[in-house]
View (spheres, rainbow, N blue to C red):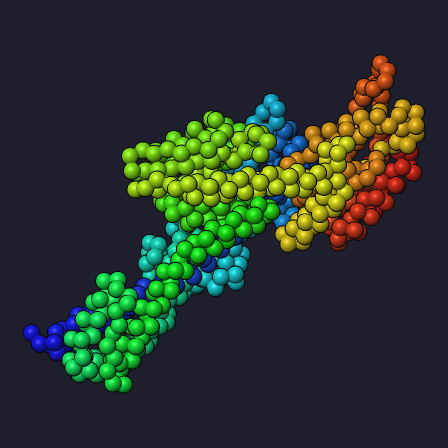
Length: 623
């Protein structure tokens, strides 16, 4: 077969056939990419609809805690068995509070109902006293129609909410009561096609089977795919024409000079960089020969530089280790160190493991590469390094591994272990030295992080009481007020001052005063919920931010605190017997007393001073 024919065959094999394959794959990828983009957009907006339902359930839970379970009339009616009075109070709560429906379920059936029957996303809580269970309370703060409208406003998706076959709400009236297809399928409504995605509410009112379906218009997807394919086809056709022209030109030139050129090229390919390609004339082959000659000289120079580059690489990694040792992001540092260790030693895999908070188990924080058949060798050297607190190297068949304990330079407790492994060849002395250095930097990094975390904790904690200090409390209060504005929920503030604390200190001493402050802090912690924020505001002043609680609820909470302080019997530190103290308390809430943190603190402080004027040991609401 002549060279021309072989070149033509070669052109077909390396240009035309791959081009056809690329064309097929590109057309397919364009279609899948467009569909994937649409699907991703639909899925993201559908997740917003799901999250909105969860958010409404969380708000309903807040309503149960803040409005219903603290309502004395409702609770006392249930305790007295007065169902009629409880139902009346439930209707009042629905009418005057941000609540859509209240249902009390006993024995699997509703015994008390109030509000919109189309309400959804209930929060559920058992209602009981120490001696009697009254049933299960189901409360919702949103109805199906409002939810559907919010979903459409937030995501642009049409929304249908059903209870079984019954339509509770729909933003697509033309759909009517038609059954919807399964997830991912499409349904025609008028002239438009919609893709349907649904989910069921796992927590519905008793007797309900709520299912939410979102419908996204897929109009325009087919036209976008078609336009993309036409553009790709035009580009490929242009490339094909250019390739044919180049092939014809190259084939005519190569026939005359290929023999001599190939001889010299084979010598270069065998490693004889002293060989020179003959250059005759000034055509393209002559220029190519000159470039080959330059390339041989460049290769010789590059070989000489490789050794120097490796040394510079080692030095760069040493500098990297010194840099990361001063950083404070432990997980990120360990990932960098493991990556550097794997690349610098030519390992196949590396990982870093540190002790979990329980002090017994190990938690993997960083891994680079695939263990494959190296798991046994790596695990064995890690166990040895952890046990003896020193580096270990071992092998299992073709697998080789090194492990280094992460412990303080003074021989302190082992905090974790750093390990690398590879198959086929053992690690060199240079590999071991570099790995040992990086492990030392990792240990220094962990120590720096722990020191930083300790300093950060102490900076926001009052050392006498263990409560957050005034700065930490101010940040927490500001965050709660921002959250209250976002979700339209109240925030209460309790501000208390120990009565006659200055005289108490003068009479019994500072150490006895510190014991009083610690006992009061204990009362605050024991009476606070997990979401509350107790803190020492300064001197003998304390404050508690009470999220999700209005002024009345905050007052009741503050009264429990005041009585708890009044009932304290504090042991004398310098003599037998006990002492008692009291506190004056002021309460305020957002809304209505204040609109920001400063105004809220000022209102609560004013109320506390009013309590002082009224004779102390009292709780006063802000006016």
